[in-house]
Image 1: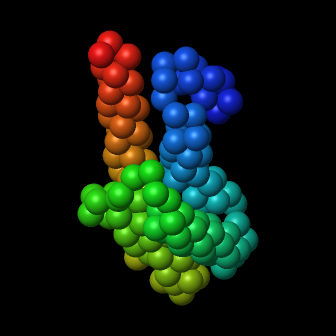
Image 2 (image 1 turned 180 degrees about the vertical axis):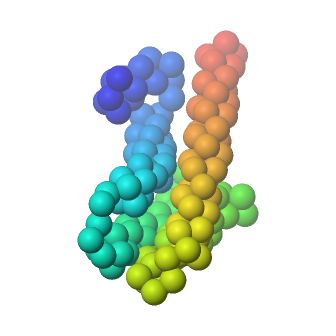
Length: 152
């Protein structure tokens, strides 16, 4: 089911569609680790080629974190708490920055750079799992809240 289908399904349950669309889009962008695996698995003639693509991925992720930060500060529907700031901005920024630095170091120091790339990818995976769980809990509470209001 695509995003529009999920929004229609959630709308039938009383979940605010705009919130669900933001959560699903954000989760899909954050969890993409397959690009790094594909880049590192390709038979490159030189390491700087892989470093360039990984560096662009890290830079793109850093830019996206800044966009998320600005949107989170502007929105008024929900006041983010420390956990939200950590899991949606700080941890992703750390992992994307580590990815960018490792990409720069990859041609000269491949072994440590590959460990940093692996650590950044695993951190992004954990962030994605945590944020997906957070989304499920949020949607479940919104569902129960709307059902309780309709019963009153």
